[in-house]
Each structure stands twice: as structure tokens, then as C-alpha cells.
Image 1 (cartoon, one colour):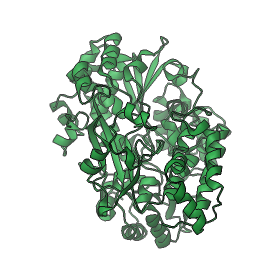
Image 2 (image 1 turned 90 degrees about the vertical axis):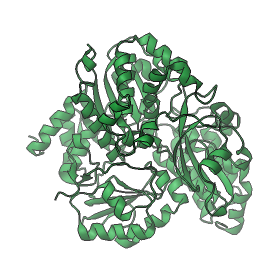
Image 3 (image 1 turned 30 degrees about the vertical axis):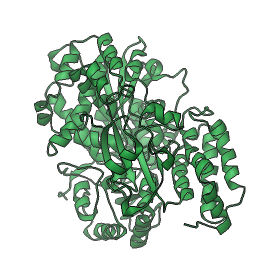
Image 4 (image 1 turned 180 degrees about the vertical axis):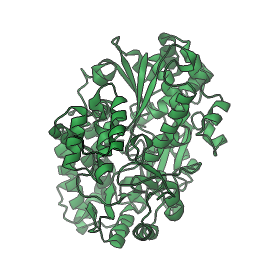
Length: 207
Length: 429
């Protein structure tokens, strides 16, 4: 018996069908499991194991290799601040400190309400737009410590149903790595990537 | 020196809709994939070989030669490496977001040339928006009959699947990527025997190509191999996307010919160092590359000239550091990356990068000892013998040896600055 919703099971079936061998579906299914539970639970990993014909230990071995599979309680908004070399050169450590101070959440932790998680991350490919910050993997470039504080306050106050890169860039961003072109309306609903084939996107305006 | 824009031409000319299939087709898009259907594998491999196209993921290996190694077993697979994670590098992100159809057409050409009917685009998990753009482009291509069954009305089938990574830099290494795509930990495999072209995905012949590499393919077919090879430079053909970041007035991605100098890149194209400050050092090819200092400013940006000076162009990421930058802190930050991203299989890398990070941190924080730089050099020697370039490998993949590049910089150029940290009991800058 699956612990997942009917909708998620349909999606899982579609994902497994995309690969020549079902084991390859482990990573996308782990994201589905996170979307079901808000983070990756033991039960979620057991469910993934069932779908792909592995043992829970094998699935755990995969999940623990990758930083994006959050096996601890994670906030509705995961704020990731880049402090790798290019962002460090332009004040990444100060931006991280501002996020930690404004949210009261130190790196690697989640607030008691389950709203915000804060982490510093290695390079997220936005070096021309340093300092780079992501919320649920939606990117904001050119973030200053002051704007980072505003971002934290906005997330706590507005609690948007979905966060979207373009919207947050306009509100809190600065210099970009390149011209982004047209706006993208899709947004992320939890601490995992917003990607249509996983069913983890929502329009930014939608509640 | 100027060369025509190739892979960024469409996004420069049509910034509002370079990502759309209508714009793509209106500017010649998908014509070359159609043409490739009628070409033999040999013709395609020879064309790409003759173009001189080098892999743009960092290794700069002949793309045509790589294709020629494909073993006869079938099915074969094509994997597009969009796991861009080398610190300083953000060029593939721009290609994915701004011209995804160009990458899709390059994927189709690669699949035809390598007789593959299933291609995977492995995109790093943090690139959610680029992944959405790519998926939207793939969906459009399916709707037009350019992907799926009997593409372009031929008898060739091609499925393309986007696969999101999980936040591990090492999956940009092609054998680690294959393990990851198989649903395993992203640990690199030994080569030999696991050369992807022979024993790749599911132990079958697999071609792994970078986003920028395949984005060049439609242009090579459109221009012809000779004209493409004639662009810019005799030994380093075509153009090269460079990601400029750090202390530079105009950061960004620049599509450039090889053969300009670092001075032209940093001062003319990049607008120089903000605030009238002096240049102290730069990393010429992503975090893995040994560092350059002002004495290297007039070297030509070619694979050979960079190698002769003891470094590499790698992923094309140039990270500029001004005179106010603490070299110990910068080195610590680069090494922290490799320590964090080490997969842990090989002892020299797993233990060595961890120790290097700790040694540098204590120097920066004021607990450094006079012997610490030599200790760090000794640890580095254990990861990468003699700190030679190219490295003498002690590990399965090049991640460990890459991590010692900052130590090499401290040893060769900034020994006094390290000593000043020890003498001052902390960072004097």
C-alpha cells in the first residue's frame, strides 16, 4: 500500500516510465517524496525503495550523497546564500550574516515555526550576479545585506504560496549575470526545485 | 580582435524571445538537425573532428574524437552534461535559459551521429528555472515532431528526458554523472575500464557532451567545418564562452575568440578593476585551475599558452581578485568547496582536502604556525605529487588534484602573505 496520494502515485508511475531502468527514477522520486512530506522522511525513502525495487538502505545511501535531499525538518522557505569564492569576494559572508541575524536562524537550521531554513551553499552558477541567494532554488542575483534582510521580512510577513525567481529578483535583486529575457511565472511551493515534470511548480500569483 | 558571435548570436539579436521555437526557426533553427538525418555517422564524426571543436565542459578534448570512440554495442545513449557547478562558471545557465532550442538541436545532431534513440539532459538541481525552460523547449520540439517517434518524418526515433541532479558538483564528472543517472551515489568510476563511450550508462556505449559543446553543433553544420575552424584562432577554433566574475567592473558571460590576452579580457572587455584598485591575482579557468598573477597578463588565451604557463582554461570561468583580497581567505574558500564536494572514495582527496581546509582556516583565524604552509604543501603533495600540472593522479578523478591549485598559488606567489598572517596572529588585511 502506497503512503502517497493518488495524484503523486500517478506522477511516480510516469517518472518511472521515462527511464530504461527503473532504478534511474530514484532521484526524481526522492523529490516527489519531499514534496509529499515537506522533507525526506524514512517512510518516504521506504516508499521510493518500493517503486524502484531497491532496499530502503540503498535509497538512503543515494539520498545521503546529495545535499538537496533534506532529511531533517525543513522550513516552507529554504534560503540558500552562496559564499563560494566569487560571491565571497563581493560580500557573500555579510549577506549570510544578515540573513541569519534577521531570521534568527543560524546556518543549517530551521526556525521553530517551520517557516524558514537557512543554509550557506557552494557555487550556484550566478557568479556574475554576486551575491547570489536562492529561496527554494528560485534565484535572486545581486543581493545586498539590506535587501537580504528585506527578503527575510517579506517571506515571514507575506508567506507567498509560491516563490518565483523573477518576482523576487525585482523586489530584492541587483546586478544579474546576464539579461534574463522574458519573465517566468512558475514558482516553488517548498524546499525542492520547481519543475513541471515533477509537478512541483505553481504559478507565483496562485494560492 | 573580433570574431562573430556563434552560440550567443540569437540572444543578442533577439533578447525578448531568443528562447522561443518561433524565433529559433525564424533564424534558421532545426534546419541542421533535419540535414543531419540524411548524413551518415562517419560524415558527422568527421565534420566535427575537422571543425576542431573542443569539449567545453572543462577538459577541452576533441568532441569529434570522443564521438569516434563509441563502441559498437547498442543501444547507445547520449547525455548532455548541464551539471554546471565549477565555481565561477555560469555560461551554460545562460545557454539553457536563453537559447534552449539550440541545445536541443545540438542534442538531436549528437544522437543521430551516435545512433542513440534516448538522450538525457542532466541539469543540476539548483537550476530549476533553466530546467523549466529546457523542458518547455523539449515539449515544443515534441509537438512539432522534432523529437519522439520518426523525427522530421524520418525513420529515426529520439526521446529526450530531463534529469535533475541533487546538488553534487562531482556529478559533472562524466562517470559520476552516469552513476547518478543510474540512481546511485555520484561517485566517479575508474577509467579504464569504464570509459563512457564503451561502458557508460547501463554499461552501454554513452556519449557525454557539455551544453556549450552541443550548442556549437548546429553552427558547425551550417557554416561547414572549415569555416568554423577558421574562426578566430588556428589552434583553438570557434569561439569560447568565458564567465567573468569577482572584482571586475563588468562581470558576465562573453563569447570570445581564443588568442586575446588576459589584459584585454580583464581591462578592455571586463572594464578593469572597480575603484581604481590594482589586480592581485585571477583564476583563469574555474576553481580547479592554478592561479595567475599580473606577470601573466600578456599571455594569449589559448589552451596551449595557458598550459605552458602551468594552468588551464577549464570551464572558461575567470575569477578576478583585487589588491584588497586576502589570499589565505580566498584559498580557504576554494579549498572548502573541494572539501565539501569530495565524494569520499579516495583517501588522498577525502582526507587531504579536509586537512587543507582546516590548516588554512586556522592561519586565517590567527592560530597559524610558521610550519603551516609547508604542512599544507606536504598534504597537497600527497594528493597531487609535486603539485605538478597537469597533475600526476593519485585519485580516481581530478577533483582532489584540483583542490591543491590555491596552495600552489600561496607557495609560488604569496608565501610572505601567509607568513604575515602567522606573525600578526590573524589576517593583516
